[in-house]
Amino acid sequence: MLFNTITFVLFHFLFVLLYWISPLQRIRQALLLASSVVFYAWYYWPFLILLLISMVANYGFSRWIEHSRSKKILGFAVTANLCNLGFFKYSEFLAENVAAVLRLTGLQIDPAAVDQNFSWVLPLGISFYTFQIIGYLIDISRGTVKAERDFLIFGVFKCFYAQLIAGPIVRAKDLMPQLKERRRFNANNFQLGLYFMIAGLAIKICVADTLSQFVDHGFENPGDLKTLHAWLTLYGFSFQILSDFWGYSTIAIGLGLMYGINLPLNFNLPYIAKSIRDFWRRWHITLSEWLRDYLYIPLGGNRHHQYRNLFLTMLLGGLWHGASWNFVIWGAGHGLWLILERFCPRIFPKKRVFGWLKVFLVFNGVSLLWVFFRAPKFADAMAYFGALLAPPYASSDTPPEALITMLVAFVIFMVLLGKSLTDRRFLTWGLFRQVAVTIVLLFLILAYASARLDFIYFVF
Image 1 (cartoon, helix red, strand yellow):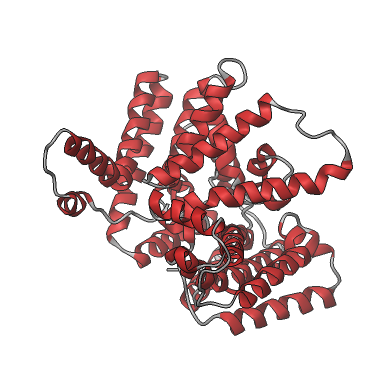
Image 2 (cartoon, rainbow, N blue to C red):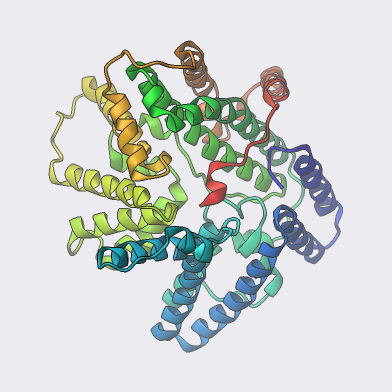
């Protein structure tokens, strides 16, 4: 069930209504779990079996870890979760690379046979809920949270549908207390949540889905692009992936608010970052914090082998995004960039006049690295880089004027709405402005809702 469908909107408001008219908190908790199970099963019901098995297993792991305080049991539980993720996400990638190495030794292995034997349907949200539960188990081992004994509360934490598929990655200490507390209906929260939901849908449908048609064409046919058009398409993907993922996260926060639940901010205007470190403090914030707390710091953080730890963290962060060498290169690129910033902290003088230049350089550097993220294979990425540097006589089927219009529209859209999606300033607006903005967004959604495309991060 996609957020950007009428079916989901009706589903969500039905359960919100049932939630608030329920007299007991226990019923409300049961409704949250039931709605999450239905939501997950709606997309492809066999995935639900895996989710429920993971839920039961990790409930047991959490209790076992708290009782024993054993690092070995924690290691076993984390390994079990990673093996589950690896089986579905990386088995084909691993088999292909092993087969390639064996072919170098002279063994004849059919690549098609490898794809057929190790190709799996990736369960929705498995990367996100795996990281979320691993963080929970580690927190129990560290003693920062207690293992939840109420299976119903644990189940909602594990699979709350607002953030189940693509985050934000929520910590137990932030979500579980909210699930236990019986709250009164708050009109301001509901109003803000509705605005976030509508604004997120507008960003997804009007910007991300519209840009996708230009981006898909460009990356499928890089040899047909003029140099200017290749750069415009590259910027188009930069804005598409931000709009798509930021739109999802904004909707998720809005859904939570309508239940009286606060989910963490996941994006904070990342393309105005003045350094790559600043970028990762603004882009997919909950993943950045997860990598910092559960990978970078345990590796030694800033204390020991800082550059190695930065590189490994971003390398594994890239691999988390997908089973492809392109994602490894993408992560490694960000890791090397972070090292360069730490190693050369005074590349630019600390004067305000250089602020926009830093933003320009960071945005373009991030955009260039997006080529590896978007291109299906390394050869495709190299072909696209060739198009970026090609002479301007190549043919083009799609006029760049339409893409330029969309990019300008995105910038205007973000200038007008961006800050209102990082805080609660919507509630400070006058009633006329609130209503006017909401009506305009609804009009845009209806005008552009011709196609219902999956969210990009559904496949991660």
